[in-house]
Length: 152
Image (cartoon, rainbow, N blue to C red; front, side):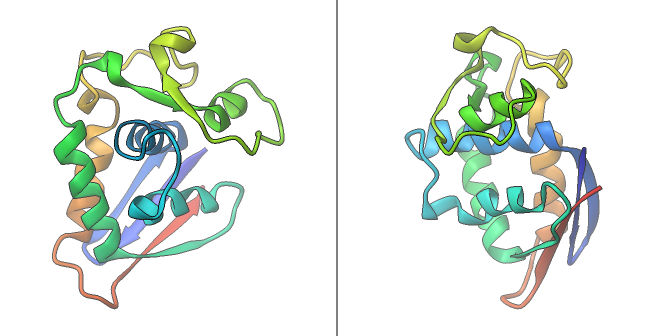
């Protein structure tokens, strides 16, 4: 599964697991383990999984991702977080649980199937390219600009 993001300044495509780990790490480190309103657009991306088209306010998504990058950039790989829902999908348990708690990947088993070896020692090596791409396609967005998210 891949997610396609089309914004005012272009588009990018990324494997869903990279997005999920970004969202889970934001939730773990910036939202005390539970999804909240502060990162609503980041969480709403998940609505596209399974084939639905999701439209997000580009400026809000940009602001949320900029705040996340300020906190997550440069953190060591052992700060990578994963949610109960992401673990369920990886383990082929369907439907995923309603619980959305997060934990560090190192406490779960120290690897994420489907991700492969990140090839680095920082969170940037796992999802930095997704963060940078989303920030690029939403840079300078107006109030009316949208990002379309689709599961490919």
